[in-house]
Image (cartoon, rainbow, N blue to C red; front, side, top):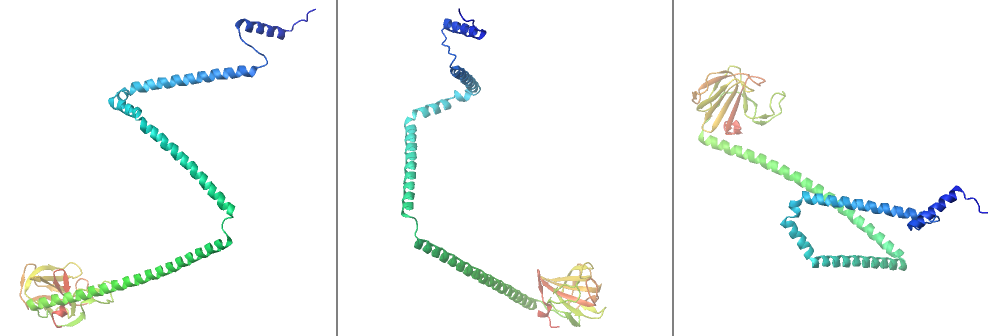
Length: 315
């Protein structure tokens, strides 16, 4: 009697009959091959989709940039690129030879390293000599640095000395120039003393006891009693009569290129624009402006330079 077939066996038999009729070689023992075929089919479909997308993109790019792609310049560039076969082949040969040379050079280097390692490297004597040479080089560098530092200090000292000499020369030249200017003024203009009195402060640098008094004095201070009459030392014209500033009540009287200042006066007799004669009474001694007591500030100017009055007059 025939054995009764189970449901699974009936299904398998039906599948075998179906596959035979359709010419499909079906095997239950090889499910992996079926999966691989399915994978290959999906990969092919994926590549086909990518190719279609690329082709669509190329067509779109060509349509949007048709003016450039179909221009004569672009066609000429393409033609020149494909016609220059010799250059491309030469480039290929050059690249090939370059790669070969690199490979050969690496092999030579590796062989040389192997030879040195086989020989055993440096000996102890060579190491000692190399250490000694490095020490000597370091010592020489230190000595050079010390010498350089000393040289720098010496050069700085020389520069300071040179600057001091230049300043002394400038001071001497200013003094000499002032003396020349005083001699020029004396040769052209006659002076008389504006007042009789005691010299309370000379021309030049000084050490004042009051902070408001300037250290560099541009004139000559002649102490006298308040109200003492001041006379004009020269002829001239009043170019300023003012009561403003540190000079207090003061004059500027000009003669040629010379200006004479009379400052700290109590009272002024003249006004701007008046003509003055030598010995004429022009003001009274006072203590106006930046002053510590009654005196006359007597100042002589030639252009922008201040001249020591004692180089022109004997007080």
